Amino acid sequence: MDHQALALEMRGLREQVTGITDTAVAAADGLLIAADTADSIDPEGLAALAAAGLGLARRTAGATDRGALRRTVTYGSHGCAAFYAVGDTALMVVLGDEGMDLEQLHRATQPALHRIGSILTDTASDKASEGV
Image (cartoon, rainbow, N blue to C red):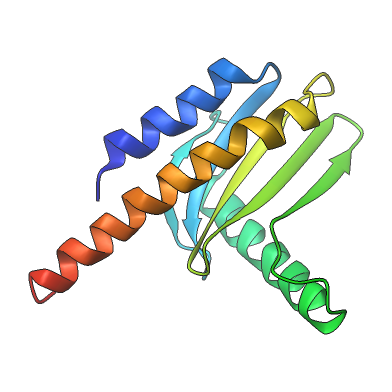
């Protein structure tokens, strides 16, 4: 797993979008892959909750014929949490404060999601070719 490349992608988002406070990448089953979070955030718990929420949103989109889920956003009184599908096997969660520009986040996230998907796919391909 190229954790350094994932960390660069997560830091790159923070640099592009004002207001991002925390980021994480997880497998669709909720296992944490990489995180750039504050000490007050439990990254493993965040990954598990994000996977559960994204799973429900995927099922809702499918049950209502809305197509493949791209993202879901939860709003709180102190900011928001955006959950993005990374293909069918992973997800990225981005936490932001009240000042985060969601439209800017959604635009900046699209190329990052493709690169993160490639990083994860390359890792899976490497393991398959090694017989792991």
